[in-house]
Image (cartoon, helix red, strand yellow):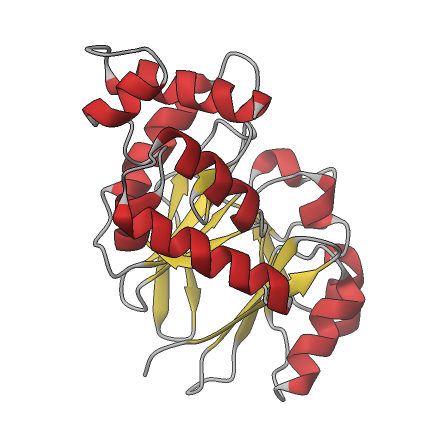
Amino acid sequence: MPLDLHVFRTLSDNAGALLHDPASGACAAVDVPDAGEVLAAARARGWTISDVFITHAHHDHTQGVAAVKQATGARVVGPEDARAAAPLDRVIGEGDTVSLGQETFEIWHTPGHSDGHLSYIGLGSKVALVGDVVFVMGCGRVQPGQMDAMWTSLSRIMALPGDIRLVGGHDYTLANARFARSVDPSNAALSARFAEAETAKAEGRFWALTTVAEEQATNPFFRAGEGALAAAVGRVGAPAAQVFAALREAKNKF
């Protein structure tokens, strides 16, 4: 039986996400930007949070974890560098697995945005929890000196099957779409998605859920190996990692 997935806005643009296993009743919160909002979202669906999966240690992803653990007794797992920010029951890293009901998530170390950043890859449920590595039509900011690490992390995620759903950590979708269109103006799929992003913003819809295939078609950071993107940042013939770095620097200044 597949997992139920609910993605919603918390704080101003953070993504709250709940994964629920109907067979066992187990429910995982993915990070906890705001404890009250995450607990309310679970109550509204009749779910009880049993687990918290932390993607990375940044305050806007961990500040509500202790309160959720206190309210529910949830088991908390996450990277070593989140230990000071949240009450971890288990430290996890590259090569580990985490279970929710019958689903097993592979744990990938995906640094670049933060040193200990983890992604949770659920091939059975076709969902990957990618935190601040991948956003809809974008990617997270990169720590100084970590461009190569971020490119490696993105490359792993973009190689997943196209129907894998990606749960990102924020909704920056319209801003990302504007930048993507500026460097890839002839991409018809991107133009359509840009229009959708404008509509979503006007209607107040939250958008932090995408698929690998959709990002392969419209995300300039996924497409750094293509000539049109290299030309857009003056890196024709350069390796994809260098094109990615130039694209990310251009986005920082956009």
